[in-house]
Length: 258
Image 1 (cartoon, rainbow, N blue to C red):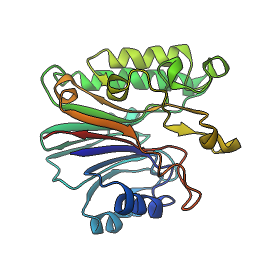
Image 2 (image 1 turned 180 degrees about the vertical axis):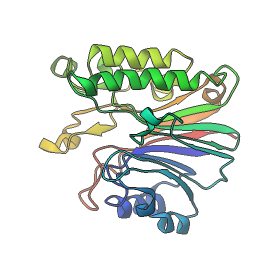
Image 3 (image 1 turned 30 degrees about the vertical axis):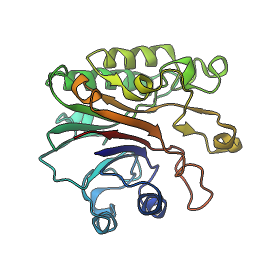
């Protein structure tokens, strides 16, 4: 089973790119999209159905939004946390597929200080509390998405330059690590302890060609799922495009044994 997490920075703007990627380059079983930037009635269901997917969408006009598209049947779908405060921004959904709980997350970008920064820190606390309902030592859990945090110096192109900036602030990183400590494994780092690989590059200054990026997109798993992982990689093909216009993120793709 091949799973991908991909911040598409507008699903409709990226549709032709995604279709080419899926048909020409990489066959994916379960697609988890973030920042789809459209309400459910504007999501291109038909295009994905033609590729063999059924899709569940938790969308928002012009901002945020998450979707899961699967070639397998959905056993459960939960859109949002079930809390009006946290669900005002469409940043989370969960689906159960083939017995695995897949949580799709688009964490807030935040700010250097103020309300947006506090909201981001509290978001990770809320996400942690939500996941406490599962036994991460025994159950199959996969948490994917754009977390908008780089964990370590190896996860940014220039740690000295970026330290203290959004996505690489001490309290953001501490909040994310605290979240991981409930029993989630950063699968890419588990499989590639020494590789410097990014998932996001600014559109400016040809950053992707200079490889001036950050690793902020993750596939996180409970222990039982970790043991089934056969590979995990960042697929650079959708990012290193001039046409169709790419997202500023590259997808992370993992393969799991049945």
